Amino acid sequence: MRAMKRIRVVDSHTGGEPTRIVLAGGPDLGGGPMATRLERFRTSFDSIRSAVVNEPRGSDALVGGLFCESEHPACVGGVIFFNNIGYLGMCGHGTIGLVATLAYLGRITAGTYGIETPPGRVSARLHEDGRVTIRNVPSYRLAAGVTVKAPGLGRVTGDVAWGGNWFFLVHEHDQELRFDRLEQLTDFTWRIRQALRANGITGAGGKEIDHIELFGPPTTPGADGKNFVLCPGKAYDRSPCGTGTSAKLACLFADGKLRPGQIWRQESIVGSVFEGSVTVEGGEIYPEITGSAFVNGEADLILDERDPFCYGIHGL
Ligand code: PYC
Picture 1 (cartoon, rainbow, N blue to C red):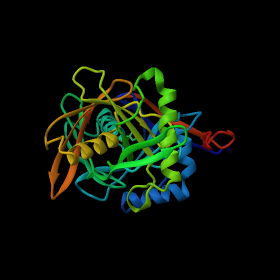
Picture 2: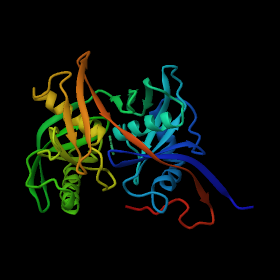
Picture 3: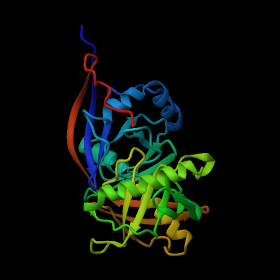
Picture 4: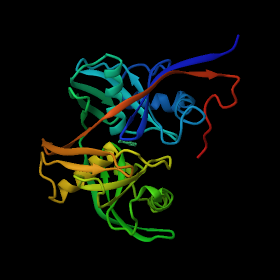
């Protein structure tokens, strides 16, 4: 008898950034908060993470999302996001992809839905025209103007901010943000990432800053700025990055450059755009991010124990 496992997935992309939502056949993580379930995923089922997103079934750019049942009546479900090397906190493009997936499956119609994630509950509004607005977890700037010496780059200064993941946001640099410079941009940001780690510069509670975000002038008409975002596993975000845009909004707000409700249009390195704004409640900054996702695949992944790469090619 061959040991074969089937995992039901729906694929989508949000502004070019792919998401693969696991709907059935994934690990049973039991109940409790998403943060607890994430730890069970990490410690007991990490090979499933790799099988779903890594080559030969996936790619370094692919973000997976395990759709889970929620214990909160106000929530349509919970989600744990993961990538080629590990797990994410929140994921903005992925949440937009999840909502588009649930709409495609006929499980939701236009309206507002709670979704549990490891760093907290978010909400998502599916508009009649298919756009999705997510209200992210509270976001904030932890430290402004942090300087780090990066090998081959010299001194680089940026802000440390939380948008559901930890970001180092760099505005002053000599890099042109162009699609034909992906290799140079990846090398530049990877050096910063390693320098932060080597110098013990972290987010709150010693958490690793695993996303690096460069900013430059926009090229798409109507956009306010363009970014290049390096993700934890060295892939770049094709979308403007929902959590990265949230971190940016928190910094703009902290600098007095963004009023509550004012729209900021963030362009990605591939030219896709998210619209962002903030609301302030109880002293906390809640980013709202609007974008669109398109379903582009629906499949059963087959995990065949005889396959030497059944659980993916990994090892970064
Ligand atoms: O949209 O938040 C996001 C995201 C994080 C990593 C890739 N995309």
